[in-house]
Structures are given as C-alpha cells and as structure tokens.
Length: 293
Image (cartoon, rainbow, N blue to C red; front, top):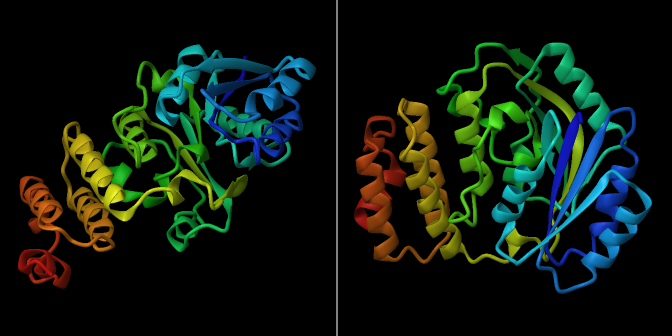
C-alpha cells in the first residue's frame, strides 16, 4: 500500500460528496481512503456507503463522537500506507495529486512534502500561510520548525512518510491548534523535507466550518493550552520559538474582552518562556499587556 488518506467526518453531508468524489479521480498509485465517521447524526453515513460500495479503496470506520483529533488517531492506528495524508470532509484534493506527491516523494526520498493549497473564502492569515517556497532541505532540524513558518499550521498540506510519525498521535485535549501542535512535534523526527508551491489541495472556509463556530475567548484559551503543550517538549527555545509563543498568545488575546484572568495566564507564560529576551520590553504590545490595556 502506497498511501493512506485519513478523512475525519462529522455531520458533513453538505460537502462530503464533493470531498469523496475527488478521491475517485486519484489514479496511478495504490491508495486506501479511510473514512472515520465520528458519530455523525446527518446523512454522512449514507454518502460514505455509496463510495464504499462502488470503490474498494474506501474503508469505513464508525466511532462515538469525540472530535477531529480522536478521529484522525483512529485513522493513523489503522493506516497501512507507506505515506499518509489528511483530508477534511468539506475540502477536496485536485485530480491525480496523490500520484504526483508519491512520485515526488520517492524521487527525492522525502520524509515529508509540504505543499500549498487554494484557499476559498478563507481569512487573510490563512492565505498568507501559503507562500511561494520551493526548496529541498536534507538536514532539517528541530529549530527549523520555527524558522520556516510555512511548515505550519495545517496538517492537510503535509504528505508524510508513516515511519516518521511512528506512534505519535494528535492531542485530544487540544481543540483548536491541534494541527500545529502535532506538526511541531512530528517534525522533530524529520530529516528531509520538500517545500513546494504547487497547490494540490482546495480548502473551503464555510459558515459552518469549525473555526467559525468558536468564540474569541475560547480560541485564546485553546492557544494558551497549545503553547503550554509545545513548551513542554521544546528543548531549543530559540528567539524564533519565543516569537511564535508571543504571536500565538497576543493576537488571539487582542480579540477578546481582555479579562484579567487571561492576561495573567499569558504574562505568566511569557515570563516562564523568557519571551522578553526575544520581544523587547519596549514593544508596544508588551506594554499593553503590562498596563492592562
């Protein structure tokens, strides 16, 4: 088996048919498409059944609803492909993308290919995540996770050798930013990575997308949880890492009502991670936090 595509599915009947249909058009490579029904209560199961019945590459797994990370973990537990990638149920992959990714990975002996995506109705920060970057790095190191911003934050634009992932799984305690935490962690075991500007994936930001159902305060709290988790395993706390900590915490906090509880927790993290050494105390954003503005 060459490739395992892991598709977590929860109440996605509005967009699921288009998503799964895009997989039918993946030819020239031995694939399995693992559909994990995460306790859907709509017509998602019926749509999946159509594809499972007509195409033997589709596999169906049903589980109790426990979130996207748990669903992806089930997919990783059962995946048999040499490479794995992820597809969200409201997005789709361009025709023959898997064949092209596989051929490229084999040609350059990559541990991972980081590719780009076409973003439809996405926020500006999403579009800015996909820069023009074509580079083969054969000595990728832990510190490079923060050197190359475009290796984060979306797992669905990573084509990964399964042996690199090993027993690593998504943290089910993180509800927002779970992609980024997993990426930062698994990239610690990567030696060769290929960045390509080619757009193999199409991301749709719908009104009912999970990112649009979260309030700003919840996003801020989840970012605090994300930073704490990453801080627990990062050994080389470079200035680039510290800048990531500051940006992750500050920009989500700025959109909240800026309550003292959140402010205190963020300041505590900034101090413990020695962020002041990378972000000058004269920085106006630091001053806002300190003054309680």
